[in-house]
Length: 178
Image 1 (cartoon, helix red, strand yellow):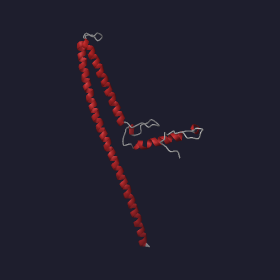
Image 2 (cartoon, helix red, strand yellow):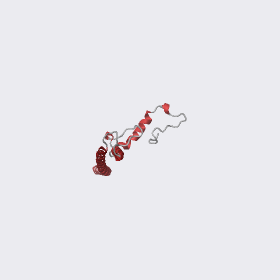
Image 3 (cartoon, one colour):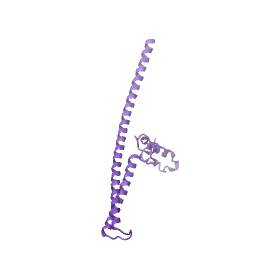
Image 4 (cartoon, one colour):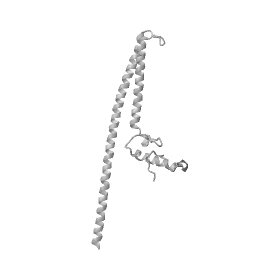
């Protein structure tokens, strides 16, 4: 009886060991995936930094153009209301063009940073899931919309159910009704 009990215990220990090895392999695979995602995010950050540097350079170049056009305009104009030279109106128009380009570059810089750094908005509650609403590895976003849709269905009262017996698709097809 004693040897049979030891064999049973050994069998259980082997089974436990195999389960732990299987879980460890799964965790190792998940860890590898998270590292890959982290490297991708770091690559995106590096690309954003390079793009910001490029946009800043472009902005600084435009500032230089604006300054030189302003100097040329002041040479041609003696009074702000009265233009003394025909080329001054061309310079003024060029200044306006450069200023509008500068504004569009600045706007595109903000939009680029916002679209790449901020998490997508939930289509049910409008919140940006994530830490401080920032895009990350997607851990919070994975289950947020499903939970949000379930909350939306649970919060509906019976008065919102159609009289024809069909249930409303309040979750936009995200949740199966059981």
